Image 1 (cartoon, rainbow, N blue to C red):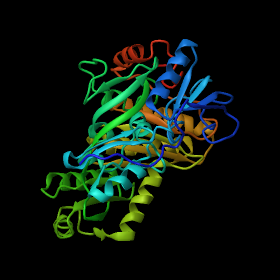
Image 2: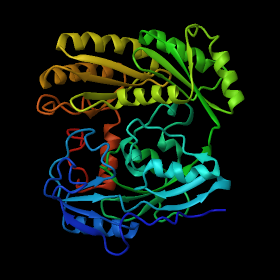
Image 3: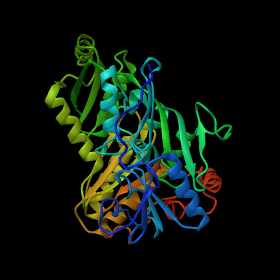
Image 4: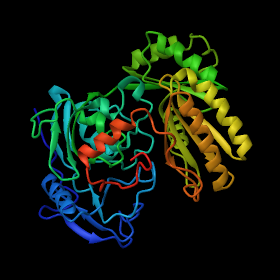
Length: 421
């Protein structure tokens, strides 16, 4: 039976709460110093806030938990910060249909807690998930190791309600409020970084909560060895949920029943390149994946670039990163979803000019390999020495058309994708 979450929203009903940014939570958004902040407690209030901002020609920064505010180019000064923490309700959970609908300000960890009693979960594990909201995670395009088996959040989204710059609701999946024929809003807004509109509500496909998990720790000293090991298990009938290389080892995760998971771990250990693999369970397994997530996320003072390429290009890009880092005088480490080709370059040590030179050169190598890259974290001073975005992708014309469609006045997250649009 479908049910709703009885927990109160973070903000009381009524008009959207508004206040000045004065060091209170939420005032750390780049480009928001001195901006007015609003925290709507309903979709109607959010729509009204956007409509009012449009009528006054005010620029707007959309903010969830703030875990991806530094991604892309710095946002120019904005007049208004719209926070989604009050849009945190579980709208419905149809366990028998394996779907859940939630407002986009709900934190991912809370949704998982609400699904667990029904033996269900959302198989989605982005690295910087602490407190991150559903809408923010979709808008950031973030994904974790489980994307190999389940895809990203956009792939798990079967319906969405978004509010473009003018506040008029646009929905796909379920009851149609406004016809957007041909648009898959989940995929269109994935990675949009708040530049198209507010992701206000999502309907998601959930999965059975696995009874057991185990991970094989496979030594892999280089990207070529990691790629070979990842391909071997991917080509087998063992169905790994994830295969991620941390620069030293390949972590291969299996989910399922206790007996089935144990059997697949034993069989995987017989694959080529797995002779020295060690099985991780319980605390040891959790620690390995926490360490991997920390590498991907980086720390203050690091510069982190996330890229997507064909998996066959990973060994060459790993070698290119190492050579470029040596020339620039920085330390670099590549981590990668070896089967998917999604990789992260983390730079540390050296000054901002060295980071800027290294990221610019390596990003060009990614572009030459047919890939794309997003700057997710930067050391202080890097923005003054390097462009946040590299060469525009071939789809930049489509991206600009979507911006004109959803935000014709260019008021949302101004500058986030500069100079592309």
